[in-house]
Image 1 (cartoon, helix red, strand yellow):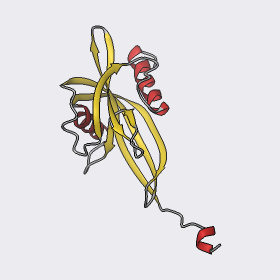
Image 2 (tube, one colour):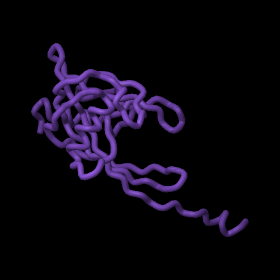
Image 3 (cartoon, rainbow, N blue to C red):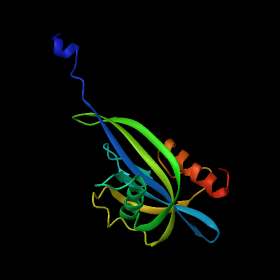
Image 4 (cartoon, rainbow, N blue to C red):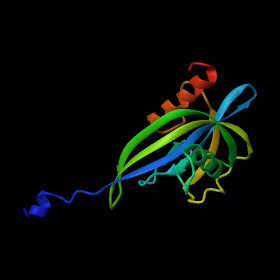
Length: 157
């Protein structure tokens, strides 16, 4: 076995920072949040919180507001930070350490649409009930962020 086979090349690590949020509206006395669907690299559909990369000199809050509007069609304003999630994934050229900062946003207007998503990653968007267990979200760490939003709205700081 060659040395290269025994000691595979280690991919360089890259740091990425994104922001997004839980945008909430109240309909008929129930809190709802907008979530997006996208396909992962294997082609499976994942339901996620809207999020994306910082552009230019944006703050994390400005990024969250813009990304939520682009990916859901809903315009909002930041109410409070909800925490961050960090994880690793691998691309063909690097290992990526991603940190996503999440914010609670109040829905101010707009209509659900994925037509304004410049990356065209979102394939669907929906309002779902926000509660202490928002099961529609694919990833447990995003369900935790949604639960934190629910607790914040319920007054459990």
